[in-house]
Length: 135
Image (tube, rainbow, N blue to C red; front, side, top):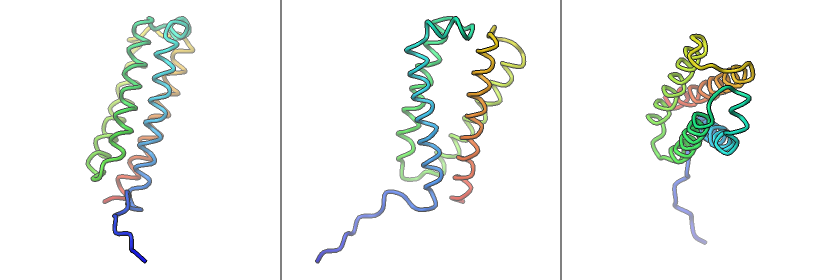
């Protein structure tokens, strides 16, 4: 009989942070691909230009891919703090842009932007709880 001596891929204390980061990556990646592929029809609904819609979708998909890769890192605490800070900065920036009316969005565009911002805030809070669990 032989014993398995490999270390586990994750510790039980980092499972919430890894889950929240992978959930965020899945939402960002999936939604980003959808927005990039459907940029032309969505531009009429949201009020953004087709190019702006495509660039936002591509950036979101790229961020989702990066986040998924980072979720597999060994030392997760510092990465988690950076992701929480990035999500907080995104929420603050998005709310500022929406409140100031800098983008000429339709009612559907405003609703979609607010819904995505709320989802980002919820996932960021889960990530924050995961980081606190590692402390």
